[in-house]
Length: 472
Ligand code: XIL
Image (tube, rainbow, N blue to C red; front, side, top):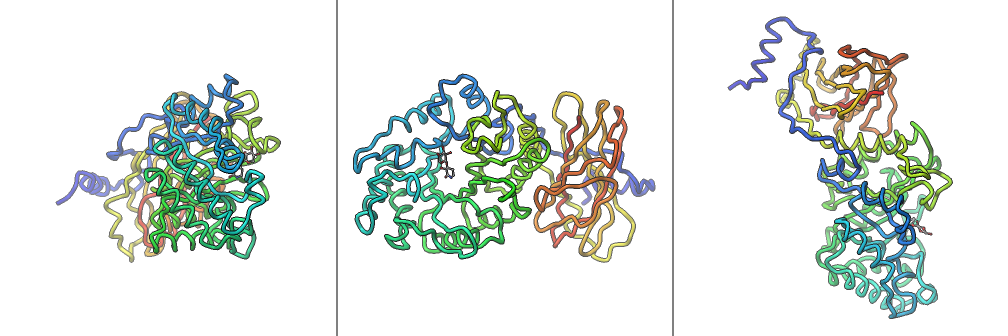
């Protein structure tokens, strides 16, 4: 039986229309209204978008106004840490944590709990403890805090930053580690017993690059926990990036490999030092890496405005000191909205002919709905030649209005890799994402089109790349 699309293709080929890049055939892609806030845009693909909140800033109306409008997952930046919640042994103080929880709940937002067991920001009495007394005190802390917030926390960072940096792949030395190597699983079991409905996460930094020893060490721990039934539901990637610690090109590989262990992954403390287009592109790469992994359930940025950041001098957030949206905000919003559109794989390319001839078999399709508002463009993907190990693709950019330039985002599906391009200037925020800009002047008048192309090594995955564009 032939499908309408196959018949359509047959007609195109029969008419000799081998170059059909300007003909758009709409796939049955669900219409997805573009979200105008980060939380709405993320919700388009079933994800959350969160921020860290400092309770002391909530009476700043610019701060709380942005936080309320843009984010739907809240992490207390410091107020649920041990030094805040148990300042004296067995005397708990939840007032600052509760203030943030109440603000979140009264505004319809969920809360990530941060953090139950950590070598840092311990109260003085805990810093001075060791051995079995510390182990008991730590477990009591986990139990009491998780019980206080029982039923109100989406996910707890049960253990934070327990592995060493560098090439050792070892646990970080700390008073907690010296209580015995099983302190981490003991903490997870205590948390599960106290709040069975919270997702339980291990959270760390410098675990973004798949090739790093620290990443491998955490991966092996999670794998071991899953195999032995230690209760763990998620892994948090802090994602504090700067020029010393840049977004790795294999980020989606890392997220995907952890997810394949049977845990959710979350980007929990995102900030990227820098400015302008470079910063915007890096934020976009992180968002696209998350969107490429089905079990990446959400992204949290570590503060609202640059001036609220723990690394304020690096201007690492999405809003400037005055609360204005930065270029990075726009790139995140656009990436989230693009992710809300499902790109259907081409049903006809699942059984490719490995000895395909050089005759291209284009089947153009509109894969993206441009955000409303001017200026705008539409990106259309069409198949090119196919070989046993690679295929060519063409993206046609159509200006819907007069535009001064365009940027196109091409997302390939693991293990695909783009190995060559033509008619554009590419950059690579991550190994599965290419940002293509025009060679030279990108101005187009309404209705005009321009095309660029690329070659994908497919590694057995024939799924079509996702393509979108933005115009200025
Ligand atoms: C930081 C806070 O942002 C600062 O206000 C505080 O002084 C120190 O801690 N990793 C974490 C977070 O898990 O808790 C840290 O937050 C940043 C690094």
